[in-house]
Length: 66
Image (cartoon, rainbow, N blue to C red; front, side):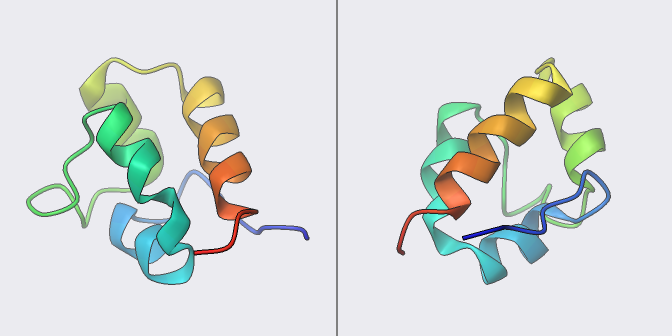
């Protein structure tokens, strides 16, 4: 299954479309409440996470059933 995650999607958009990504956000300590409106690229930068690693983890989780 192909996922259409892009770094300009917001945290909340990803969680709504791919609920199985929640553990990734928790693992990387990316806040989905107050930081939910932030694009993934901004959230990764704020958390000090390499964007490529973050996106790869999200892509992998998004392929899993919720």
